Image (cartoon, rainbow, N blue to C red; front, side, top):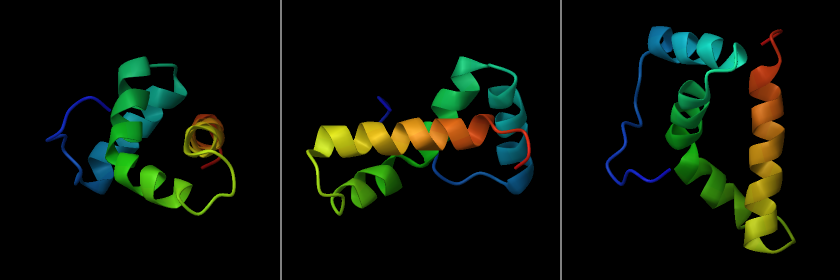
Length: 72
């Protein structure tokens, strides 16, 4: 989430490859997926009634858990 000009649009094939790698424990792939959704996560965090940092942390935790689920 450090890159300001991070790639935000990728093909379904590229996303599926990243997802597969993330599910296998590849931290860089997980970071790339989270970077893709960073703006969405920040936007949604505004509407959760808790501190912004806590809201972001909750969203990230749930999202990572969902991504690690091999049934998706």
